Image (cartoon, rainbow, N blue to C red; front, top):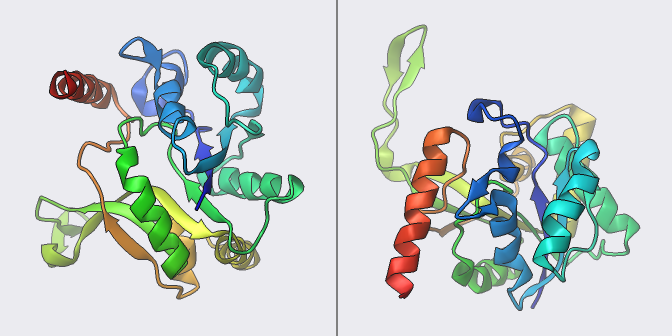
Length: 237
């Protein structure tokens, strides 16, 4: 059973404070995005990969990342949109244009700035998507969470029920396409891809993931990712 992967990487990364977008910053000698693409390009259950980028960075990405790394499963580079939801929508439209809009096709959506995902979770994730229709990776929160209104604590949700959503988030193509169509019709902007299905009252399963699967957003995240990569290298030595 194989999957098609959309990798949104069109964010500007303003919190990183760098002169280039965060996906091109070096992590252990390679751009962050190169690490992320490699996770899926070398996995036997991945059929096609569609990176989604700012339109004016497509040539740069092709020349500086795709060609030098020799990736073999990149089907096409897709222009992104103003919001992440717009970028994923562009990706879905590109799949349809390429004849990959089969209702049961498994679509994975993974942040370009999450280069530390453990690909050993992919077989189980793909199996759960095929069985349930939708499944995302996440981890239980470790800290007590507070809801705050105007500077004061409003309530403390039960931590046992709180999970931190990660990516990949995976769906059967038709479920995802229908959720996007309803979101467009109702002008609903979700916080992640799963929230669009939640808006349609479609159940989404949760697969326990890995706390190492961080999203690189700030300079501190880049330091942590470097340390985690170093640790992985020591463990595999």
